[in-house]
Length: 322
Ligand code: SF4
Image (cartoon, rainbow, N blue to C red; front, side, top):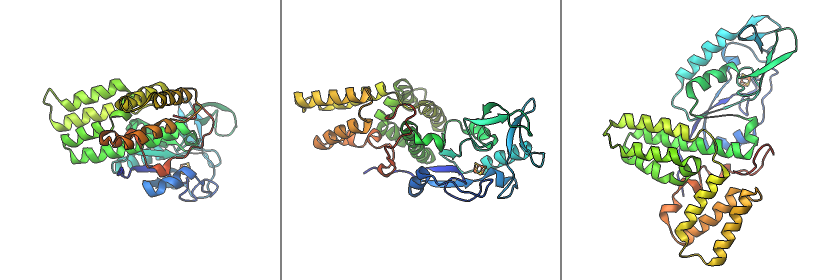
């Protein structure tokens, strides 16, 4: 059984943790709830952090030539306080692997935060990123960063969790600082990385081979940048098919014609979004156990994060099954 490192994740405190929303509420969040036993969460509420109370008057982003964070009722401009808090908070963090933030908040939201024309009127003139989230993205864009709302989508959730646990593993390897651990990390992730991006994965292999005899810290640095690039977007379905065919190729002498045909039809159904990738992978896992391939059994592709976090529900937006 795979042993997972515990990822460290900064989370908006109003998600599942504390009643810190402007109206004194806390938001129940199933994903955060499930993750709690497997993740070290660092909860933060930046609005409370800059001294706003609970409950408090709402704040919003307005366009005054540039975006500003204001509290319409008091007329206060909180932009500088928030930027200062965000910088100090990020500086004070230990090494973290990801951020899980509340959506649509003028502070924590990443994608769809409303920009108002002014502080007094309700006209929305655009969408932006919250002030706290903006600082995170500018400093840690390579980490696993998501909004709770988007994690209702199966593909995005699978990608977020895969990235999070892969980065936590890498953090452990980087702390040890030994090239043999880095080689092992690359070997265990071979098929996962191939699904994400075969070209970048090959480059990572060349970095580890280190023909130029660079110092180890430089090798780790270069490798880390490539790892962030590799994990930027979820793998495409076609890339997953490619990897599954590759793995099935290990058993081509052992499998009979019917088994091969069944597997091919399963891959077709996956491409047509009729079955999830997990259905294909479970057949491969069975063969791996049956033909006793330790090399394949240890591949992270079969279990990129703890099974207890697998949840097949989906918001229906975008491809349901990765
Ligand atoms: S969204 Fe962010 S700032 Fe708003 S209550 Fe939640 S943690 Fe606090």
